[in-house]
Length: 334
Image (cartoon, rainbow, N blue to C red; front, side, top):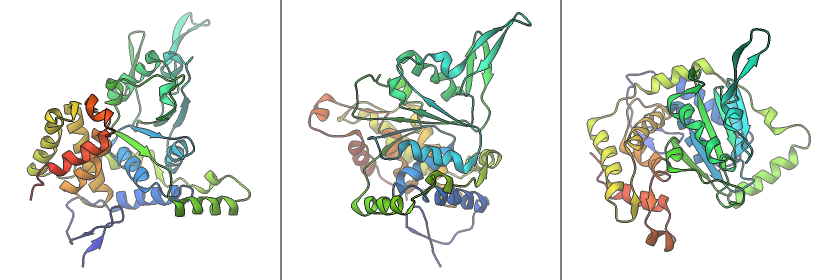
């Protein structure tokens, strides 16, 4: 009998995995259930952040104030027994406030490096676009190479290392736009929307019933950081057929020739599509990638890596809409 997938709701034919993903799927589902004790709705946001964790990538979470961007990221970090750090970006924040700095030790008369808050396992950067360009640039090396170079010395990050960053899409006063090179370091750009009426009603009911105590205390730790690293390594073993690799390449190449886009996606986007698709397949308990996996993650990977032509921007089109159209136009391998 076919089994229903708990992420997409599709019914999948029976198959036998070559890689045992049972524990991975159970642990990630436990993480999901812990988060949903507090977060109502936002299923796709939770899915994308879980995929991001499995793929070992970073996520930019964008949404209006009050839609639980920061809370969702905090709760995910709480379900994993790891070194969690939160950094509030402000206009006066210096690069050394993030990465750390060398301080003179008067006892030894030598400089000692004091690590900044970026040295952790799961990092939450709140309002990343509030810090100036030089502070944003201090994240480049951390996010892409998982290391920091200060005064000629290189300091490695410990695994896992995942950055969640939030930003408000409408408030521009006192903010600094993220450059394209910075955006390209994020595996996903996840848009958080307002809840539907029923979800809004459930939020009110649950808040009314929770008269005492902190809702965040309901969330328990269900995974160790060692398990997460093991799951990340297991995800890399997920099988990808040659036809699916060609499908990914065709999607990315077409972003570079699409008449509605003035800037296409880079080869880093191709790799991101591959790794995210493998993580999504593993999250569903499958050890192989399907074209549907690629289609599911493509908008969140490509949307922030391309640029619309001025004409399309004036017409009110969004990059997400163009990407979805483009993906649908590429022939699915059979």
